Length: 222
Image (cartoon, rainbow, N blue to C red; front, side, top):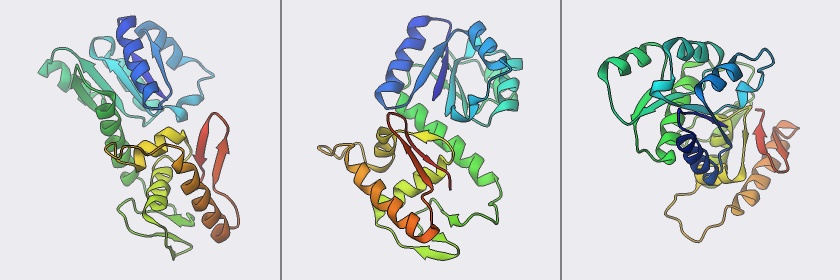
């Protein structure tokens, strides 16, 4: 899920609509509502947040620091003008990127994924992980032994691994695996690839590490 924070309802609604068109759940909030939402004691769903897209003018440094304390999810600030002083202030507070409008949500998603990738690469790999995924086209391993997969299935496993613990939709998986230039390919094809991948993982691990929920998508538990 992406959280969009803007001073104008029309701006938030436009981005929410574009995210949803890409198969990404999203929610638009005004600044004061966002701060209330963020500080709710029962706020336990931050693990589901894929990123924040926030109007630069609606992002006090104190709020930026508070977000960063609670989640590693990418924080991307946007504005129609660019102030070097403000940009440096936001970056120092923990903002991951500052962009200028107009910007397409596909670029936002690419920038967000780059932030997540750097975060994952900075985390030590737990020695108890049975499945090792290298995210560079190299064969994955299970218990130290290679897991030979067709290219599409390996791409899906890499995407699942990058989003471990987070629910992803069929459309998100499709967008991550298939080039946008591949016309005439339906997102339903990923269901077959995922089914074959899950079977191979289940055979090697003794259990299925991918949880599927109708209307919600897939969650890779690793």
